[in-house]
Length: 464
Ligand code: GLY
Ligand code: MN
Image 1 (cartoon, rainbow, N blue to C red):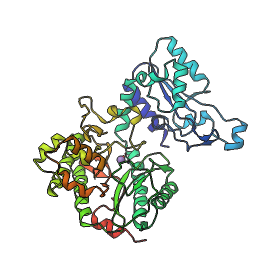
Image 2: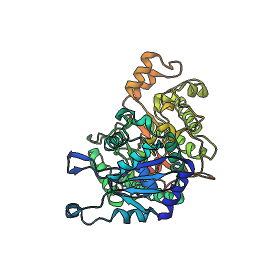
Image 3: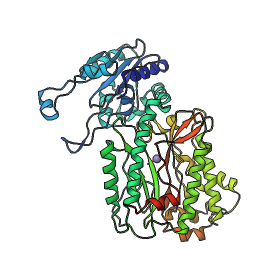
Image 4: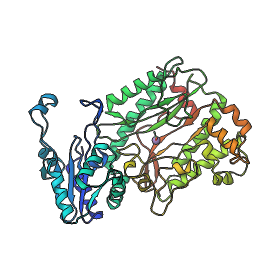
């Protein structure tokens, strides 16, 4: 938790944007896994954490935007809870730690909202994503369950996004720390990988590193020789010679700030020439994206610049043909990189996507493209110092997608479908760094960049 002044200042700035009505911020509850008392690891809501810092279940907060009155709702534990959970701090003491003077039992929350509603006041809440909170809002506010997303407050969403998008120095310290642990996690995988291992053996050790130094992974680890499947969570294959293994993994440290990195490793420790040719295109796109990221540039422009590098590289290999600008305009790169260049990162690995991807990643004057790849760009905004974003270009050979384009004749004048057939068993390559936008440009978060060049990777692998 940060010092209380940080939370007080964040809430003060929130009220500079949301000037009237009642702001309701719900914390998360425990969620059951396979029977009621067997619960998933507790994860607090990130916006609640951002404004109130309290990392316990079943808390809610109300801020009266007209008067500035703040109340945290929650129940003190009773003796039954103490028997199972040990002594717990009083809600009032927890609230005092983040500069909130008033507390009340959770049961009073409904009365508080009822009173505000009766007076015709606006009740601002964020789009709920957990069923428990959906039920609470439905019961307390009388809004149909399937209407909650639309009823969420756009004013509150925009105010929260504006604050959380630009990271404070204390947040950068945490993200650097998460990235340092992410470094160890990835280098551990590089060193230990051996032919004949099952992918899951590496996942287990990597996640052990993460759990030892942090609290959890920031998302389910992706580690697969089928890197062409973008989010492949299946880890049951034996590592075999000549394959590429995509490892996309991140950590969440105790403060809940995240890291998210991807490296692609040759299973036997050495890249083939064919693999190197594709790898170095992706690396060039990754380096370009960092070097092109400056305040004032949009990340959409950077995505398109990285796309040009990818298309030019594939043209050099004879996999596509034609004018590079024309190919990028036609969306040829979407066949090879059907995802966006990156996303915001912070307390969530895809920061604030619960609030709506377009509110988070798009400036009001930007509209989301429909094209494959560009349409999946999660962060398109004009960059400003304090943005924390991922830089994660990739090239994938997805046989089903290539076959689809081929049968439809889509971009047939540009794509060398015949030559692509020899890449159907190639897999995919993604290389992901986490960047902080500064006044001077972009810096890679964490003390050291995870080995990334062909030489660095080959010199790190098989050294355990
Ligand atoms: N690292 C997973 C993702 O960015 O989607
Ligand atoms: Mn990512």
